[in-house]
Amino acid sequence: MKGVVQRSTGSWYRVLCDDGVSRDLRVAGKVRLHELNTTNPIAVGDEVTVSTRENGGEKMIEDISPRQNYIIRQSPKKRGARHILAANLDQVILLVTLAHPRTSTGFIDRCLLTSAAYHIPVVLLFNKQDLLDPDSKIGKQQQEYVAYYRSMGYDVLETSAVESTGIQALEDVAKDKRSLLIGHSGVGKSSLLNALDPSLDLRTKEISKKYSKGVHTTTFAEMFPLPFGGEIIDAPGIKEFGVVDFDKGEVSTYMADFLPYVDHCKFANCLHVNEPNCAVYEAVLSGDIAEWRYINYLRILEDIDEAKAW
Ligand code: GDP
Ligand code: ZN
Image 1 (cartoon, rainbow, N blue to C red):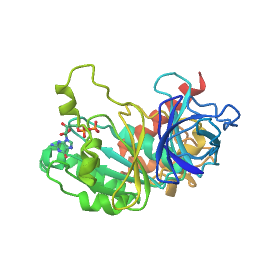
Image 2: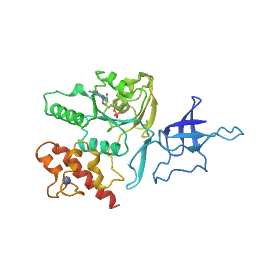
Image 3: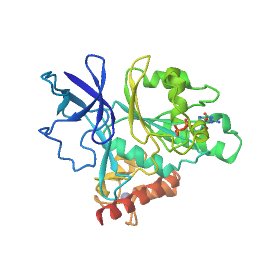
């Protein structure tokens, strides 16, 4: 029997099996794990084979199918270690807010870069529209970002979980796909999941604050089937999105706004930092590439240097 991992807690995995039953299973000792050197050898979204032997033994995960794709990031717990966020994805839904809390474009761009390198499309979702005055500084900033990311070819949605705006557009995007939902804690992931499927009745942050400290709040990724088809994997509270396994030279090739210029630099191996006659840098000076994108690019190169030092 096959199944899909819905939740992973380390030694136990919740598997939605082909017979429609969710089971908490352990991994048989003989399972050959993929050699990715990660802190979690089996990830949410993995397809597994479950043993059906009934001779008194418990059901166990016996094999993991090869992954179509996966997203890896630096482990939040262990510096230098890698952690698979989720496997076998159709898309990433990147949920951000420019206020309450503020998501930086640096975080957005790291996430876009990682997804592009894994060939996974991203839908960018700006939530909490109800809090935003379009004429305020932040309101104008958001309009700039939305237009810029759209011009790069990204699908961008604007939603409010509180006023239920943009929810139908989100449903259209999520329908019949397996999406990984990424965003800082507090941007409204649980609220939007509840808006998509009220029967989920997920706890949102404000409510959980009222409970005592003892209440268990999950820090594990979890897959939710959607009533209209498809699944969303909620990856709670991502603070940082460390870029792993990149060569500095390939970063610009995943940035759609840099791409028209990279072949016009004087040096074929130009990193667009301080080389002479750099077409990318000239595009920044002329305003064709946004300055904030270029700054984020330089920081990503620094991240890679840092990661290599470990
Ligand atoms: P999560 O940590 O990403 O799951 O965020 P939650 O869904 O728990 O939401 C965090 C807080 O933001 C809660 O107090 C929500 O009520 C609030 N919130 C979520 N979406 C919106 C929105 O669209 N507008 C406003 N004003 N508040 C929102
Ligand atoms: Zn260059």
